[in-house]
Image (cartoon, rainbow, N blue to C red; front, side, top):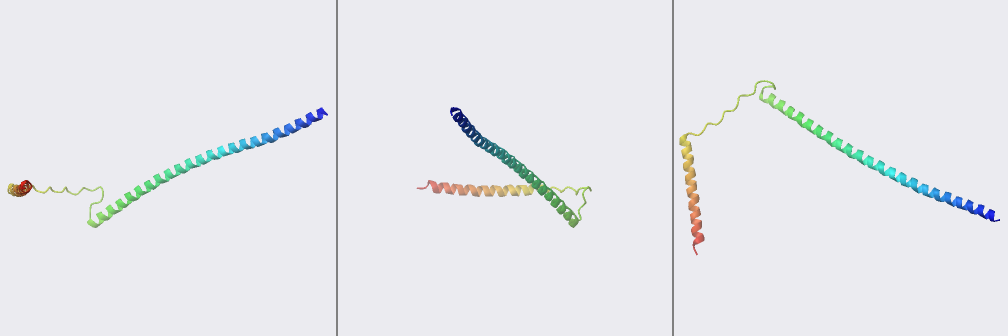
Length: 134
């Protein structure tokens, strides 16, 4: 009978060991699956960030091209309206600088500035007198 008890006890131990190992391996496989899932989510997030970045670059390039084309279109319209020279022809002559004032005009301007300065000085003197009076 003791042999029978040992066999039964061994079988029960073996069954418990198998059940426990199945549970542990199930937990381990769940942890591995969770880790794999986290890694996949991180890769997807990274791919999404790269895709957004590339989309922003493409939108920027499209906007620059659109502005360039619009600028070219407006320039060609302006040239056709004004009868301007097409690109590649000689540029228009440089604009003339405004002539410098004559000595008489410079003297008049200086006299005006002196008169304005004298008026400002008189106003300041009047304010000082007001501030100094009791």
